[in-house]
Amino acid sequence: MFRFLSFLLFPVLGYAGGQPEKWQLSFQQPASPLMEELISLHDMVFWIITFITVFVFVLLAYVCVRFSAKVNKKPSKTTHNSLLEVAWTLIPVLLLVVIAIPSFRLLYKQNDFSNIDMTVKATAYTWYWSYQYPDHENIEFDAIMLTDDELSEDQPRLLATDNPLVVPINKNIKVLITSDPTGVIHSWAMPSFGVKTDAIPGRLNETYFNVKEPGMYYGQCSELCGYGHGFMPISVKAVSEQEFADWLEFAKTEFANDKFKNDNIAAK
Image: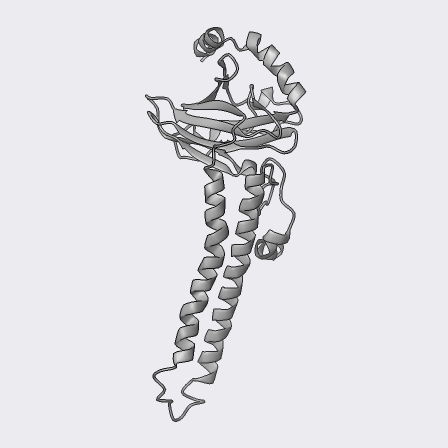
């Protein structure tokens, strides 16, 4: 009963953090302005749908009782009511307009790449992700899921990777997303960022996000890409600008493009 009531009330309940929680029914805590707007739009539509559902249910119950054969021995011969017909046409139209305006505004904002601060490329393989920083001397590394015996105490199972994608906070970061040309379709999905974009072989898709607070955020491939589908997580570490600059200096030596990639391929 508690979970059922929570489902009904989840737009007004607290949201889980940057990773899934046990018995979670609502969204993760929004970590980007886009996700905040997505949740606001969802909550608005949720209450509109709830009102319509309750109204229709009450109306049907009223009609079943008020106009039943037992109550109306002599049935009404009414066939037309102009005011009622105008109302049930205009009210749904107005509701759709109310939903459409913020929906189209948000859709435009999700595809507005006019103010990008940094670009990252994510390539899906079977079954792990590879990241490249084309704006920073083509730093490139693979992100492999940690096994149970490799996890530290604060790392979630099946979500943590050996090398997280490191990004600065409060920056518009464009992600170019594709898949290995010899592979299959994957999907780069980060629930707390409001991002979910398919990685398709031979095609380059793009999205962007802006992380507000430092921390670790987790996602997963959300396409049924094969038997390793559940083992290619996405971990993103958001840091301050200074910490990101320090990490870049480390990454330029640790993740030298050719050396690191060849070592990883040999290890696999």
